[in-house]
Length: 368
Image (cartoon, rainbow, N blue to C red; front, top):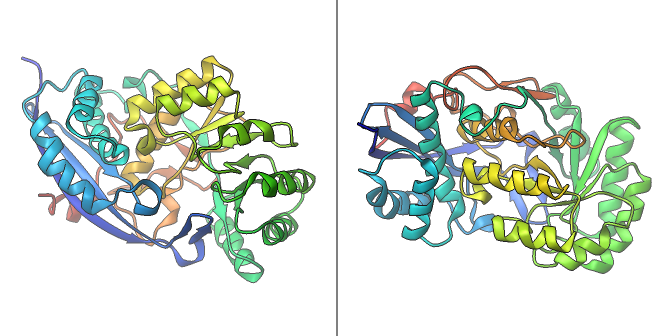
């Protein structure tokens, strides 16, 4: 008899970002995360974990809305259903709830985790990999003057050597911030720039050539999410264009590819609606010569593990741009019983089945 989904449990968790690493960008400041951990139990007593990593200003979702939808809408649709194929359960969630990709991604991750544990394989293998076991990573830098220096010092102290500078807050200040980051980080440090859609086309056209001269390696989402033509026009301005806010789902990616609007796409497990869909989007991007990196919504450890497995399952993950798998370093505490294997420069995949991680015992005891 095939395993079925027997139960779904949830646990709201709030964590503070390490004060010295708080990100301040065009979409606001991110100093605390109110997320939701999800647990799936199968009829064979296999347990899988996921994480809803959502913030209202970014996705219109948060831990409170996620808990309601998981408990009252999605769980009734899934309990009793066969665990495999997990893609069918992803489709079933879409028929039960419109939108809310981050919420669905948390539950989808738990389903995929349980499925991979049933197989006795790492999730990256269940998703079609693993193509690598080590992923280079970077951290966001924000703030001005001495505050920026302090962020860089703190990031280096935990091993980070690659960064992206938050811009999109006003061109003059953005260029001064990036110039200071370049001065302090040194001429050879990997530095990109992330505008989070905060510039107009005119502002982006002013800023991007200067950033190129300052040694930026890329510009991420220079204009608003809907301005695909603006993204395309900036591809000739001197820097590779990374699309982030412009690409949530497969339809967004298809529109971007057709417009030839980006050199690279930042994929999230949350934006995509789950690990399987994130990998499918990466495969489509690769087929059209568009690189992919794994972006971040400030995931906790469970979400960071999902990021890692998706990164390792992508055949064409960018080798030029590091990904944003920062959960092992970003918060004042970790939700995992054993942290991810990360030294700040890279994060490494283990051989354990599923996500290869579980929450701390005190958190496991609180699921309901």
